[in-house]
Amino acid sequence: MSEALDEFMAQCRTRCDTGLQIYGGFGGELRQVAGLAGLETAIDYALETSGKRIRPCLLYAAGQAVGADSQLARAFDHLACALELIHTYSLIHDDLPAMDDDDLRRGRPTLHKAFDEATAILVGDGLQARAFELIADAPGLSAVQKVAMLKVLASSAGLGGMVGGQFVDIAGTGRALQLDELQDMHALKTGALIRAALSLGAIAAGASASQQEALEVYGEHIGLAFQVVDDILDVEGSTATLGKTGGKDALANKTTYVSLLGLAGARETAEHLLDGALEALEHFGEPADMLRELARFVVSREN
Amino acid sequence: MSEALDEFMAQCRTRCDTGLQIYGGFGGELRQVAGLAGLETAIDYALETSGKRIRPCLLYAAGQAVGADSQLARAFDHLACALELIHTYSLIHDDLPAMDDDDLRRGRPTLHKAFDEATAILVGDGLQARAFELIADAPGLSAVQKVAMLKVLASSAGLGGMVGGQFVDIAGTGRALQLDELQDMHALKTGALIRAALSLGAIAAGASASQQEALEVYGEHIGLAFQVVDDILDVEGSTATLGKTGGKDALANKTTYVSLLGLAGARETAEHLLDGALEALEHFGEPADMLRELARFVVSREN
Picture: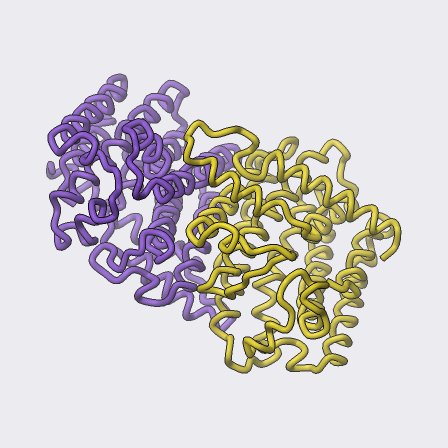
């Protein structure tokens, strides 16, 4: 990883983590209802993670690529938090016993293990609602921009996006999928929210239609590459490096890019996707350098 | 129930049910991804209910009270569906084994019984996202109105609203609550979304600040009355009339208005709340008659 990218990602993480502390749960306001203290503790646990915050990084980098006004910094922080709240809620629900049944996430007990299942369901539900509230509250953006972004986020997170992808994933477990089925599933499950990160950045920064389109193409490639690399890491990585249980896909009899293409084939696919992502940025020039570095990072990361 | 109210509620139900068929799940569009068909079936099951659609009724009646333009009919249908999607998702999640563990809802097996738990979690998650999407998509409203409504719905449905209330409810089960704790809990759990129904109607119809405030006061009273009557019905009603398991509160050792105030005391409280709701409408005149009738219905209903 280059020094510049390292610094950029650390900055994004800090901005997002600080934002989540301020806006993440109840918005910093202590609730009057005494019984809610327990919910706040669980939310704090859910949001205090060592996650890479890759979606916020893509959002900020998309804003940079389009030349977002520096006065929009707080608006971007709201959007970064919204994306991370959706991502976090989806992990909490995916980890539940009725879904992927995971005990470990980013090196710590999953929320339903640290608390209980009811709390995990409710925290997830509440974080989803909070994500939409944060966009509606974002300072310095027009109502028209906010409505466009709310639409993007809702459709990416919903039935025809992330939730639909998780359904297809679970329904397909134990059955051999074709490559196009696998790709369709991931385009929804992880791809939709990654594309949303880029769209949100583009809309907030006032991107032109052709810029928005290019960023979407970039997002499609990066989203798929992210998943291909995830599959590779699940095979190659140890539980310690990943911070989650490694080798689970094979145990669960899941079709992955590695099971379909082999390790070498999956690596090659990831490289092709990286090329496609970089190509989509060709008209952006230097301001898109961070997006280019992020694309390379997604493909070469080790956890 | 008066004939006028009966007809009004039937109309609201039809508009909402038709809306849910058109916009409820994937928006009528058949998805390309084959694996999503199973999700669509579960969504159809979740939305085909004989629910009273009380929140949509309150929304439409609030619009009528303020004198909403008839050209806004489709916008109101979007809002009605959004409210009902949030309500439906919350019932699906509340029924889960880790939460209230209910097998029966509106006379039919709950979603996780008819399908499975993973599907029930995901359908709930997806319906929530769809609700926000529907508001963002509502025709004939300004972006400023939509952002205001999205904010109201997100905060009412979220951690400081419905979700928070459900958390307090579960956390308090088995422990004796004080009357004010019980009221705080219900103000969040069921009250917040009922107040939201009135606020959404007010914003969409272009209500003045004082009209909005009056409708909120009406909503507060009606929301609490609704819950008091629910507690009464749980004791008095049979499973057949309720369409859900009766007598559950006592079995679960839950504090209710009846356990705190007795049946007669709970009835009296409901009547006081009705008076407060009607008083809040005093400056509205005849256009608010349906809201008045709905208030009486909420207090006198038998299921």
